[in-house]
Length: 294
Ligand SMILES: [Zn+2]
Image 1: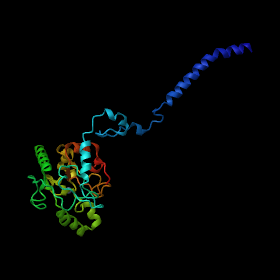
Image 2 (image 1 turned 120 degrees about the vertical axis):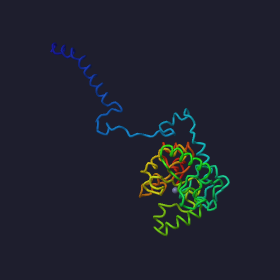
Image 3 (image 1 turned 60 degrees about the horizontal axis):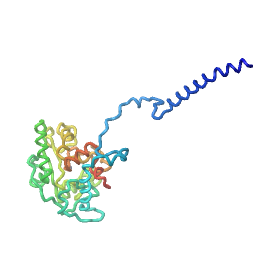
Image 4 (image 1 turned 60 degrees about the vertical axis):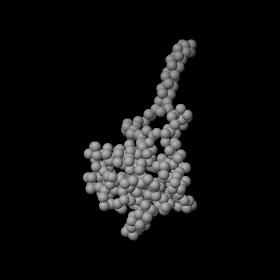
C-alpha cells in the first residue's frame, strides 16, 4: 500500500501539467474568431468595396474626430430647397425664384415641378445633335450644366471620344405633349410610366438633366449606349464634371425599385462635382444621397 501511495504522489505534478496543457489547447481552439471549420468561402477574396465618404455605423464613436462632411451643407440646402418643389399630394406650389441655385433639386414621381417652372438661365449647348427635339429649346441647359457639359465634351474629344447632347431642357408642355402622352397613346400608361416621366416629374424640366449620344451609334438614343466606348467613358468620367448617371437601379427591361425607371446610361444629371463624386464612389442614387422619402 505504501509503495502505491508514493507512486501516485510522484505522478500528481505530471497530471497537473497535462491538464494545464489540455486546458490551454481547448482555450486556443475556442478563441473568438477562430476558423473552426475552414470552408471554401473563407478562402474567397473579399469583393472590392467602395470607400464611402461618410463614416460607417462602426465609426460612430470616432465621428467627433472626423473632418466635417463636405456634402453636409449642400444636402441641408437641398433639403430646404426641396420644400419649393411641388408635392402632388399637397399641391404646394414651387417658388421659382429660390430654386435656381439648388443643383441637388430632386425631381421624381413624388417630387414634381410646377407646370410654370422654367429655369431663368438656360443657354444653348454648342455640341448638340441637330434634328432632335425642338431647336432653341431642348438643346439648352442651365448655364452651370452647359459649361460643365462642354468641358466634358472637350475632355472626351481629346481622348478620341465624341459625344453630343441629344436633349437637355424640356418644358412641362414638351414633356406632356411630345413625350408622355405620345408614349401613353403608343404603349399604354403602365409601360409609358417606366420609360417616360409624367409632366412635372421629369428632371429635364430643371435644365440640369440631359440625354447624351455617342458617335459610334450615330448619336442615337440607344439602350446599348452603356456598352459603347462613349458610354463607358461617360460612366467613368462624368462625375469629374459634376454629372451622375441618374437611373442605375433598373435593368434594360425592368424598372428600378427606387427610381421606377429602366436603366438609362445616357441620362445624365448635373449635381456638382463633389456630390457627383460622392455618389459614384458610394453607388448611391440621388434619392439615397439626399436621404429623402421617395
Ligand atoms: Zn433623359
